[in-house]
Amino acid sequence: MTFLRAVVERELRLYLRGVVDLIGVWMFFGIAIAMLPLSIGPDPEILRRIAPGAAWAIALLASMLSLERVFAPDQRDGSLDLLLLHAPSAPLLILAKSLAHWLVTGLPFVVLAPLAAIALGMDVQGVWPLAGALLIGTPALSLIGTVGSALTAPVRRGGILAALIVLPQTIPVLIFGTAAVSETLKGRDSGPYFSVLGAFTLAAVALAPYAGSAALRAVRN
Amino acid sequence: MPEAPGGRDDALVVRGLSCERGERELFSEVSFVVADGQLLLVTGPNGSGKSSLLRILAGLLEPSAGSCRPPGRGPFARSVEYLGHANAVKIRLSVRENLTFWAQLAGAGNAVEPILQRVGLGAFVDMPAGWLSAGQLRRLALSRILIGDARLWLLDEPAANLDSAGEAVLKAELARHRAAGGSAIVTAPADIEMADAERLELAGR
Image 1 (cartoon, chains in turn red, blue):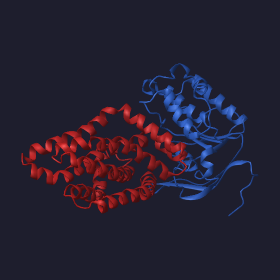
Image 2 (cartoon, chains in turn blue, red):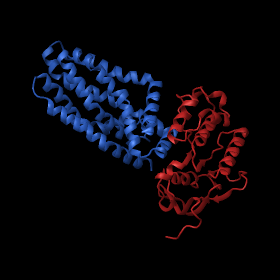
Image 3 (cartoon, chains in turn yellow, brown):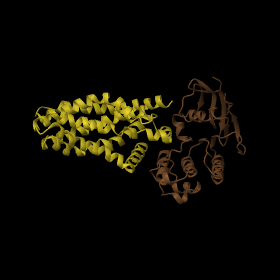
Image 4 (cartoon, chains in turn purple, brown):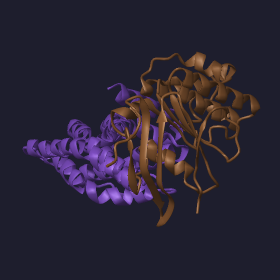
């Protein structure tokens, strides 16, 4: 626990010291959402129909933007050696990294969800479903993304490569996240979709740390 | 498997260690014992595998053959400290924040500031690490070794970038560590002066 807390605290401090990069990620989310209605046109019906999927796709892309920050700097300056040396277990390090990544690039989207819901014509009734689905689903994105980041840790400018590796793995989250929101908006029972979304996140919590540490071992040896 | 010589007090027993990197054999069948209080100086030309040897002992690299006991991973890992070529310093954090983090990980509860005084960074405690010179960064990296209570130090060219005062600090800290029963394996260029150290020469090929 000491290890987990120490690493998460350090990660957050480092993220906030380079907050300009983070603001870029948050602004990407905000601006992409604001642009969508302009490009789709003024018909609110069309907008409302695509809004849940659009919000999820934009959240997914935004959370991939900062993958390069997760492991590459630590690999470059030698910190990763010592983190692995001191970690009670390597999966715990992956978990700590994912948690920190989610706190700065998952949680903010949940906070911005009301804005997104209204900007995309989902109205007030879309706020809670969207925020809820993002809250349940985005941790899976950070966990899967961290595995991609581990795989590309020694690669120069590996962020794009990490995103390319990771994006296909996130499709289930995207599909069920979108369905959870749109089924709620249609007034149908969306409980199963939220449950499956939660199951993805739980599975990611259980598996991604091991996948990530195996990836680190493979690419660093 | 042959029984390793030496009693329980041996900090490290290495048997028949070999290392290959990219099809090329760096060294093979390296064996040695490092007892408590001992300093092993690893010398050899560039590319002879000095750094790889330390990384294997730290559990960061798999050997192609051989074993070391206790291995770098596992419960013993907490009593190993490793100083590589890279200083593992975050330039966006202050000197204090850098060291405090590693102190938390080492879990030894030693105070940060006295250690920084000892390596000569007492005046820079709250300065961003990005403002330090190359030699001062190395001193900060050295302070990370001192903050824990590790029994075995693995130091890869620890004197790199250090001035003569810094080297004196390094030697004094090594002596203090050994007096307290700790042991160290240090890689260095061939003809460095180090009192009463065992030597291991990697030939290179």
